[in-house]
Image (tube, rainbow, N blue to C red):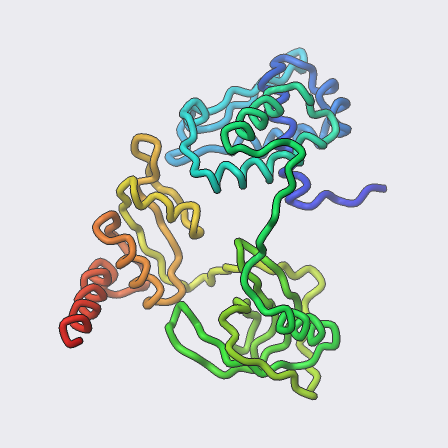
Length: 320
């Protein structure tokens, strides 16, 4: 019996099925399922997920509409925002091309269909041919440090590190138990148990200033179903609501946010979790007048953070 598909596998399957149904409306559920090597129930479960895809305020025109008629024919109507042309930077276009090209190998995908034609057009604009090789950079980290942390993870030994926390802008000495070394978003991370925090933590490896493998072993082993993610908010973390100008909309792609409003195709109001106040201050100073905190939960004086941080920076320049 085949194992249960992972979330990424299922996502790739959905992304392959949807364009084909859009290009071939009215085909029977049984035909679509057979084409993609699915049972009818698996296909219906996937379509139930597609039905919930959309953007705030989740009105009918902002949702993907899946319809199955009385004869079992299935059709998909894309939401209005799909009709707006994407404005991609070259790096975004290349990332989209690299991540989407593998969808053409999914069973049932039409090699001459809409998806293939779109990727071909995108490749020509970006200047990448189908046989070109991509050099993927996974981030800055010393090979010896990666090997040391991987070895400690295999043996279950503790590691003493001096770590710079960007969010708090401070250095701390910690003892950690590495569980897994992984790359994400152009950086290397180590996920494990932190004795100082008394719980699971993820550390960016290029911010580890020194490390020493200890002779002590730890009983803190990873759970069987654990998942390594860079950002895992806690239930009591503060949140802020930020109003954005179009030039600040890049934060939607750079940080985990919830889009609350969209104006003229650009996110104009977002909510984000804040783990550390100094991190938010630096972000707001970087955004400048293109962003304004309009509401906050669990964070005092959030609406004046940007002005206060800018004043401190200006005072330093004046003293120097």
